[in-house]
Image 1 (cartoon, rainbow, N blue to C red):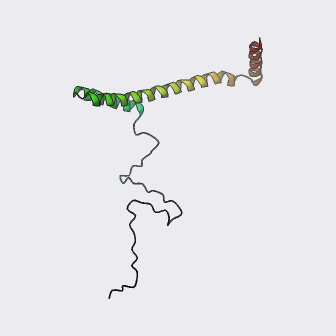
Image 2 (image 1 turned 90 degrees about the vertical axis):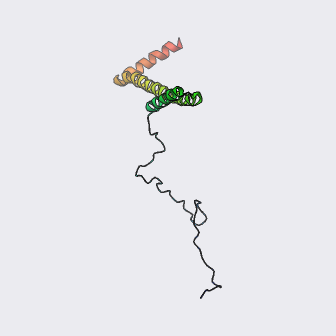
Image 3 (image 1 turned 120 degrees about the horizontal axis):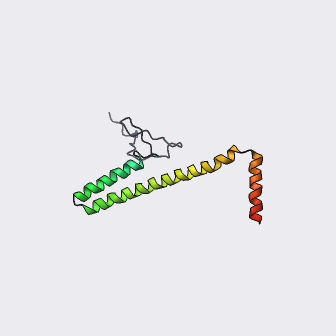
Length: 126
């Protein structure tokens, strides 16, 4: 009934490990989220402004509850998002300044632009 001479072949369960020795091609991960929402690892779920408001209000609530440590933690998070907002605003203003400074040169004739560049070079030589 039982054949002892034949070796039993068991399928091993992967238990979370990828055994790459069998397959030379890497396996693509399937979407692990079953709720139908895809996760984007490159974009935050909230804007920096909303995150700043969230952590500021959480800090106020923690302070009113008497937890100074938690309040300070939330304030540090809020400060981080405030810096992100400031950087974003600074980059926008620089981009606006660059486009505003380039716009008048684009409207001129190429010969006029060359003439103004020649005039500036002669001023720099003096």
